[in-house]
Image (tube, rainbow over all chains, first blue to last red; front, side, top):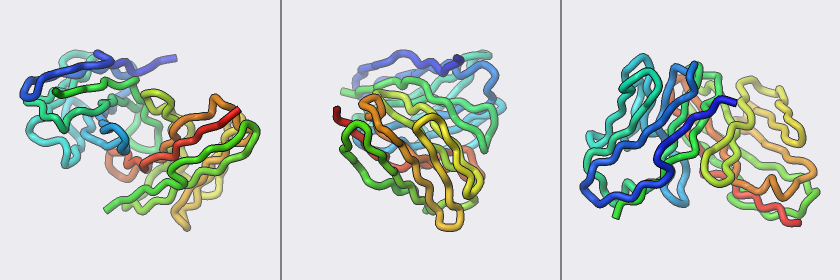
Length: 114
Length: 110
């Protein structure tokens, strides 16, 4: 069964460092997303990406964040200068349609900022 | 502001019990409601509901949506220890984002 894969599974970084989280969405999907889940809190939407551009972003997705689809398969989330409060589980998801269809989630990258 | 509220927040039942999980929502331009199961990491998809009154069923799990009263329920019959997880309700509107509730943590004891 096709799945969304994310690497690394766990990343520890020092405050102020840049991190890149990587995702390979399901191959025939066109819509890509990043969500995050701070420990003990709900899953929160960060950004969606379609047709090589951001289609929607939340208030969380400020200038420190960026996304890219550098080739036909990878989808990345970059955090430019990490803060302690960026520590969370980051989920990549993809879907075949914009609405009325399920989004499939990857296993997540646990980011710990120290 | 859009809201998705799940209840109860946590639940402990014995194997074989039937449970009902609730999700109420206030969302502008509602399009769909989705249920996910989150065991260790990734939310895994269970159901998507778009139409009122039509039950979706998969084995011991079923779900129904009431668009007039703005809620959905997820039923699990004959629960097993493997059903222990956090169950997430998420609502999609005319945009791209899914708005998640805080989840219901279900523990099924032997």
